[in-house]
Image 1 (cartoon, helix red, strand yellow):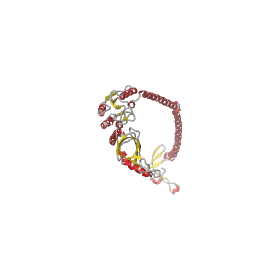
Image 2 (cartoon, one colour):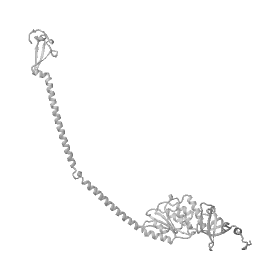
Image 3 (tube, one colour):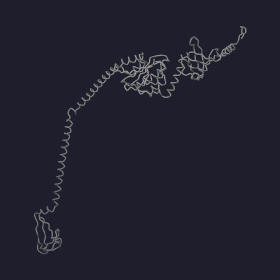
Length: 415
């Protein structure tokens, strides 16, 4: 392409020419380190910045969301193998690479495998919080699975003994690195799970590389821990290390030292707590006694308790007054009734035949017992019975005398 100051070439033509020259390279596999990922949720094109692992060279790479997702958990700092095709953006003239295949390599590949295994186990519910068992407050014996003579063993034993000197630790040694490590850890966990003395199991290992910690992401070990009846504490590596064992264990400790703090209480803290509780209990008891004594004093100061019979005396006086009024009312009522009875008796006696007899009168009855009220009721010669005040007389009728107003004349002798 010829050019001169008098006959310059258009920039667009030059960019297009460069674009053609660059794209003649075609797709090529490269290895690089991911130093930046720019995910855009509202677009299909994603942007990555890759850097050469051995030189200060970096480039922008674009890929589809499907390509990035299929690569698994690609994170910044991971090493990847990518199939890229160089190109030039016509609008800006910038060199870029289009990625059509992205694969983790080195630790990235291992991380992808672990992530895939993690998803499968999670789908089975092995990481469900509802499956996790609570740790005992003070275990009878603590099971420890670790490497013999390791720093992790020393950290756990030292801190457990310092926190609770009477603690019992049952240790099962196993390889914690290498091809047979997972199987040995599984066997040690099973032995401790079968020990009736052990109330909690700690699986402990110090820090290491991703490859060193791979046994603790072994599927068989994860399933064995999930099937344990005894609570299991995972204390693998340091805080950033997260093998799958951390997810299935009943408790994850950031370090072996942290595991020791989680499984036993601190004797000093507990003694202080007991002392504080006793102080609060004594204070509460004393306050309660004082409050009840005050209430009792108030109750005892009431008149009814100072003189228990006082109220009875008042009631007795009231009862005596009521009784006196009742007796007076009865006497008055009896007097009234007696007076009325006397008057009635006088009236009855005044109207009785006996009162008439007492005044000198007599009652005559004939032989049949009928009262003789008229001279016409008897005949001459009849026998009559005369009732007097002090006795009876038997009479014989010799004659009858009629009153003048009846216009009768005397006939016969007087009786």
